[in-house]
Image 1 (cartoon, rainbow, N blue to C red):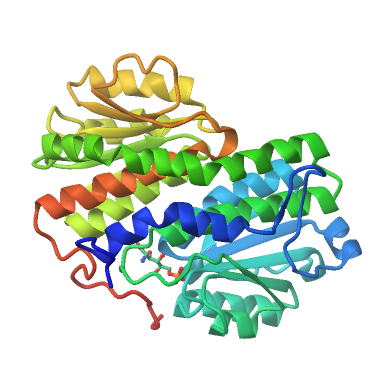
Image 2: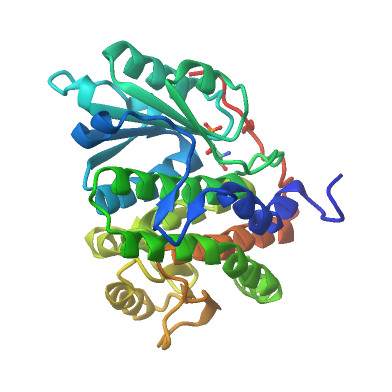
Length: 361
Ligand code: M6R
């Protein structure tokens, strides 16, 4: 049932190229720079849309953070992303010109359903982005967009994060095209990057033995830090979440520029930093932060598409595929979390105190 893998998590990490192909299958029209998503949002509504609010928890929240940046960039629509358990529909906003997007793999997360219900009560149009056919979220939202990742058994979300980000990227193109904010050639570039993603993820998976070696080197560290900018910031948060939930080590993700505003005090030679250095992450600036931590003696591991990673102690190669590169970096961070936890003998598929689907608020 685990297809020869020791854990579901590892199997699901390796299923990502297939999951991604399923997510994009039949949806790309690269020639015309368009997508077909089977969601029927009225044309005039899309054009008058003023605001998108994304609500989600945990890993899905991190996917939402990526999406928010892409919605703003590709569709020029103001987008906020809110932790579902903190969500309130703000009075004074125009519900008719607002779209609330609930991102939830299971479609059953109580906090996300509660936010979705608040949005429905406000009169805003709602869209569920989910993996689970017929889930509560699909029944309660006005529209549904499936991420088509296939079943995920491991408590740690891996392939569903990849499929969420790919699907939400397609949604950003859909919105951008219907709002006439995204030209067809720019849209084609984004779609080419999405098309190249499964192959690039496979290349990262093929480098697993290198990740294992790095995990062996740092397994006994006091803590682990993850840094990135722009699209690299949610990936840093996600890398830290994955590591903490399955290894029980202290792991934190930071916006790279924030290091010097406090967290740098935690950095020692026994706290490695993992940095996201790809397209879409202002990697040149992040390299300055890499220097900051290295000068405090902290080893730095980069997930990098840079020609010259400079001072890195280890570098995981991210193929140059454009805007989707941070998602390849994320695959390395998943493998790193997995191998650190596995070296420690943790119960990877069922970490203590956690459940796959959190059905209480
Ligand atoms: O099913 P959902 O996407 O709504 O789940 C939200 C979170 O509980 C979930 O992403 C959680 O953070 C992950 N299992 C962590 O790996």
